[in-house]
Length: 247
Ligand SMILES: [Zn+2]
Ligand SMILES: [Zn+2]
Image (cartoon, rainbow, N blue to C red; front, side, top):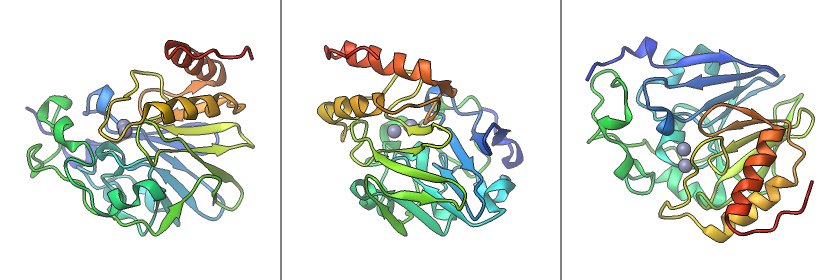
């Protein structure tokens, strides 16, 4: 398979509200994590850091422009690969051990990471069989209700277990923006990982439905608006046989 040079690995798109989307276009869409950079007055926030097969710090200048807190929406391999490159790392308490002691199994690299998830391979010396996430012990442990303060903007941590035990969403009330991680995005959701929990998943979805969200930046697939958000959650809950009260 063709190899892509490091300078072409990432794709960077500036969106509204000082949000920048960083992607890894040569990973197939289903496996490709969205990396989000949010500019704040005093510091920036990174939500997830991709597979870690090419250095973010070296090839994506926006992540080094100022102080930055690298938050993990959760600790699957596709979301935390470059966390070790950042000094300030935050994760929910329930997955702190995972970020500190990642293995191919507990990050799901095994069984997901094979050459088949790529349209073109990362540069040498990348090899799918030897791929592993580097350890990146958290410097800040998050709990539900904690706040990530960027100076002029604040994001509330919403614990959303279900897809994984320490999944979080980040909610900015002022702009009604939600970074949802893998609990909800506009594509096939994963409910059967080794540490998934069906009951927690339902409770997280019911809680998310009560948020007055206008824009959602998920862990995978394109961003969407509040109408789509409510439609996706309602359809999902109805699929689980839950009765969803009208809006
Ligand atoms: Zn995940
Ligand atoms: Zn994911």
